[in-house]
Length: 462
Image 1 (cartoon, helix red, strand yellow):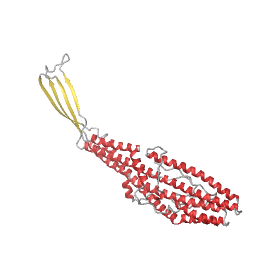
Image 2: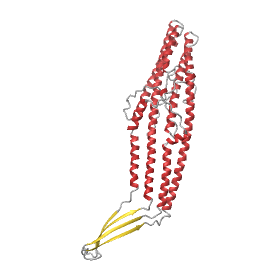
Image 3: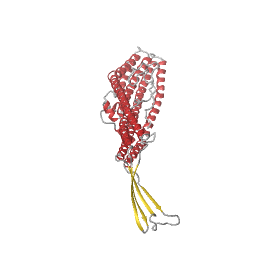
Image 4: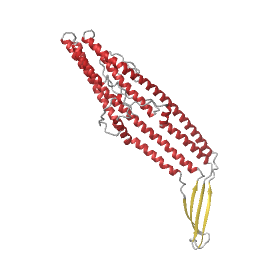
């Protein structure tokens, strides 16, 4: 019992890093300073953002081009009466000619072309916004994944301390003849297995760092110092469907496409009107009085039935298709918003259940199992399973916090696709038949704590 009295204070002192620290509510500050710096750097240097900026500027340069008159034509010629010599100045019908022709579209066509070009800028700005929002979401997911892995490493360190103390207790009981050599060997075996999990988490951390450094165009091995824990990340307020729609670049681009299709339809209707061409020229005749001419040309849309009318029908169908796309995007966006709202509410309840019950009960169960083993009323395997349950509950709590962040990030990103998860590494098991972890919204199929294999942070290809 003296061993337990010495061990119990250690549990209280060592556990706060994971058993008590995650319990406080997340910070309500605007942003973590490290995360804010990562976001600024990524948005400033990422080549996809620069490419999108160039595409917007390119479309902006097309606006003044669309409103300019067609290029005029300068015609130079000579008319000569005869083949033997130049008769300019000798014959009245022989002259040089200099003519200037300026095409003039039907009134309103240039303005519509300019409006169509301006709406192309709105479409390209929507594409740029999607790239920026996607990049920001990737950085936030990567940062949360980094905090998750580092939180798992801290949890693994706590597990190592507890296993070391359990081994010490098993050794003491074995030396006084109250325990078996198998208990001591089992404790040593679990400590060795724990090293494998530590190496896997270290590799996972390097993978997450490499992904984050790629987003900010840094060397993959550049370190990123963090001072916050996963529970410190701010939890934004839920967004209403109308707010998500206002943030959606796809919806904005689709609406701009509808307006552009309407302008193209108006332009197609105007194409049934003729265009003009004004010509002015002068004909010098040497020593004779020069001549001049002025003319007006009119295009004749005589093939309108098969050309202009077909173009009107084409753009009418285009406008209908763009309108259908707006409805499709809006419907899918509302579905995703509803799904994420449900998941956020469920994850919040799960988080509170961990804080108010599971974490405290799991720690109490572990301490009780250890006391029973020391007093000889329970086998060593029971203490290991209790430790495994504590580690599993702590790991599931971290995963719940990560998935809550993932849902909020996807909601603010107004992503049309499924929510990209935030995953970390895997934790070591402290027993062959560990107690089952209660399913959560973050891990609805959880079986054994720490056994779910996870990959690195989900990064959207840009």
